[in-house]
Length: 434
Image 1: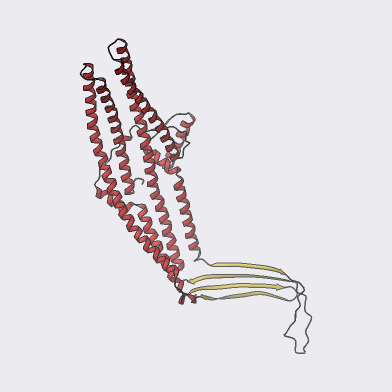
Image 2 (image 1 turned 45 degrees about the vertical axis):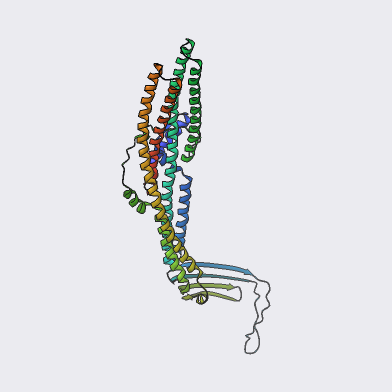
């Protein structure tokens, strides 16, 4: 189902690109598209394939080995002196030997390796698990990066709308002031002050539009789209219902859902099996062996049906006096991974507390900015009425309008940042992406 939605979304985007139109994209769609196109996740998939190959190699070691060898040798006229002569001291005719043909088939099957093969397979399996978990953890990180880019794009778009609305009102006010000046009802200096504020708003709008263009390119690159693609954010982005949960909820999920923490645990399990493999270096290896040999020296001798079967034992005597460096290294890796797991757990707890407090703070800021907006609207209304009744000067009027504009932008930014703060909290918990 997800694949079908992704294909339909790509078709819609491609159609919009061809039509040079904007494509509306929700945050969920952006994350899904970004994860599909992410080069980092493709790199993680390659690492999973690499560790899978190691598992296959480990399993292959428990299978019989079979070698086939054949040779043809061309010789010169060799000088042959037969030391084992006949009883009468005579030696028969010696053939001229100028080529030799022989072939050999040998097989071996491991009977006992001190657990190297079994432990090698288990170690490789846990490495695959760790690689897969790292990929899932990277999904959450990439999803948060996309959410941040989407949040920036949304804010840039909304700020442009606010500034355009404000600029339109300022230009309308300037037209009124020009007529008042022409009729001698307004000082030129006051009219110029109002016009200056309009120019400042125009400059703000230019900066906002430039920021929007740069943010759009960044979003396109994150989603793997052509950098000329025009995207439109979802107008309901700020209307998502967020269910507030206590810190214990996120903490409990983090310690069980964080994939990077699980990845280290699997790496640690893999290391414990590597330690067992290193210990097995001081143990003998036993294998069942067998073979078949055939050879031919034309005109002299031929060998066929030379079968052999037996048991081979291999033991490294040097292990009796040499220190097992592989064992020392493996134990060090185990210790390092154990400490890394503890350090990461502490880091997660700290980061989670920080993100939870930031999320609460962002919600409180919304309430403060909303109250400020109500006051700014009322202040602008009162100041406008007073100005019409010549109770305040033009400076007071322009200051009230500027304050109202700033407060509107603050409310917008606060609401968007609260949504992003919640996404960051989910990412730290490890549940931003299922």
